[in-house]
Length: 147
Image (cartoon, rainbow, N blue to C red):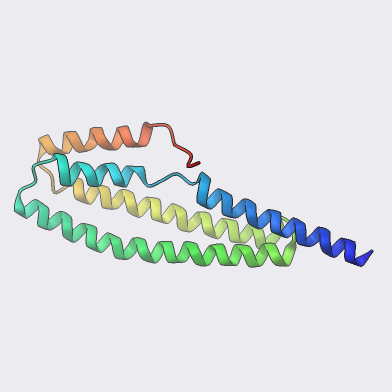
């Protein structure tokens, strides 16, 4: 009888872990806004050398911060996996791990927007108008699910 409960708990844990991984890998939207912004800045706008330099500096600084936040999200995934392994269900540790993960994801989103606005401030008014159009388009297009 104990063996049966252990098997059920193991299967439930594996299913929970698989669901988390599927959600993170397949269902999470691609960073399409950043891709569109990057393409616009470097391929379609005619930036002068001073703008190119300032944008490059902003991108380099943000890359460091983004990497740090992504490392936090990976650590959050490990904490979530440990909580799932310990609780075998949606208990207080799992809930806290999910909340922490959402906090870091939200921080990344906020800092990404701050980065986007910092780059926008480097642009001339005509460039800023194209930039705004690209941002709105990227944010309002339906999400694509990778299959």
